[in-house]
Length: 163
Image: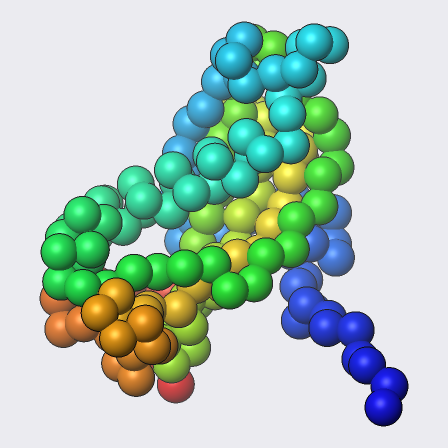
């Protein structure tokens, strides 16, 4: 029996290195500090993921969802898919903006990211991350989002597709 190699879904943001602009991007500013960089003063690749998660948490907070409240409700949001493309390195002291937006498909939260220079002229990283809500007690994917989350996400109905 031949084994198939799993493949990530197509991701226009990752496949197209141009900077995408949209009025619906949430922006989270960052600056490359010494603890973010390697010996050459270049941001270590894992820190981009950390910044993307921070931006996602702040995006939730901006629409009234506290991550700690989700945990208290018994909901976790694990990453189930991730694709990332590194276009240009960020060097020590450089300011950047982590831009993110979400599309909701059923209970799947599909996040697009672009980490760009503070003037928006240079693309450093593009990525796509998919999260699903999991019932912490049962360790199973939830069939629907918790009511509080669904209500908060309704604020963004103009920027998301639901199915």
